[in-house]
Every structure is written in structure tokens, then in C-alpha cells.
Length: 130
Ligand SMILES: CC(C)(COP(=O)(O)OP(=O)(O)OC[C@H]1O[C@@H](n2cnc3c(N)ncnc32)[C@H](O)[C@@H]1OP(=O)(O)O)[C@@H](O)C(=O)NCCC(=O)NCCS
Image 1 (cartoon, rainbow, N blue to C red):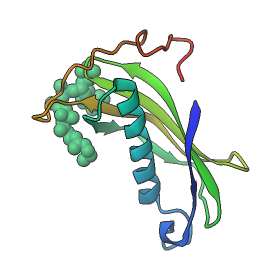
Image 2: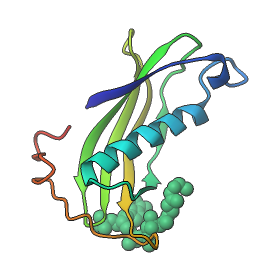
Image 3: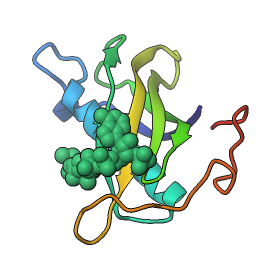
Image 4: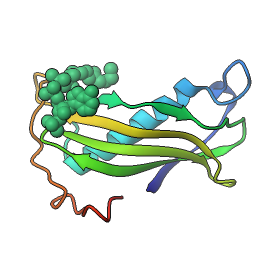
């Protein structure tokens, strides 16, 4: 898994319990994973199709710095799938884990469109997913 963006938790990111609001975190993850999908598929025409069970493992509080990690899982005809983990930069405590986030490549009519990518031309092997 590679860690990309880092975020400083600020007052506007908190819930009523004064810990990180899950909706804010999901927005950051969706954006980060969407950019990753665009770079891997060489296209900006990608949409989030599916997010599997989300495990909010532990909370984060104001002033914490978190980092968003993504790992390639699989590639299909029109889709690409990643897993995600978010952790505290300093303590490495896991905040959230998501087994599967699926993005679909679409055409100008927003219909699924083959991306013509394979595990090989993406530069991955089954044992070196990252
Ligand atoms: C993305 C969208 C165009 C796909 O249309 P669709 O008719 O469901 O497409 P298909 O059934 O042909 O599936 C397309 C791909 O998604 C995969 N897929 C579909 N449902 C899935 C699910 N529940 N879980 C995992 N993958 C799924 C399919 O396996 C297929 O992948 P492949 O071509 O690599 O094999 C359509 O669902 C859509 O527009 N959704 C809204 C997307 C959006 O707006 N997202 C932003 C957040 S609201």
C-alpha cells in the first residue's frame, strides 16, 4: 500500500463528538482514489461505482495528521478496484479501512467504456500490487 495525501484535522472537519467526521474522511478518500483511478486509466472520465464495507477502526481528533493509503486490487474491462487504509501519520494508528473501492471508466454518454488496461500494461504483477 502506498500513502498519498496527508490531511491536518481542523475544526471544520469534526462531528458533534469533536472527532473527525466520517463524511469528511470519505470525501477525501473518494477524491484521492478517483485521482489514482484517473492516473492508472489515463482518463478523467471515471466515476465511483462501488464502495464495500467501511470499518471506522478508530477516531482522529483536531490537530492530528492523517495519511490516505491506496493499493491496487484488480482490473476489469471497464473497472479498476483499490483497497484503502487511512492512518495517523505519527502514531500509525489505523483510522479507517475499506476493502474495495471500484471506479468505472465511462464514455461521453456516461456509459461504461473499456479502458484497455491490463495488470501487465499497468505495470503490476499479482505479487507486486501497490
Ligand atoms: C458507473 C455506471 C455507468 C456503471 O453502469 P452499470 O450499468 O452498472 O455498468 P455495468 O453493470 O456494465 O458494470 C460496469 C463495471 O462495474 C462493475 N460493477 C458493477 N457493479 C458492481 C458492484 N456492485 N461491485 C463491484 N463492481 C461492480 C462491473 O463488474 C463492471 O466492471 P468490468 O467491466 O471491469 O467487468 C453507472 O452505475 C453509474 O452511472 N453510476 C453512478 C456513478 C456516479 O455518479 N458516481 C459518483 C457518486 S454518486
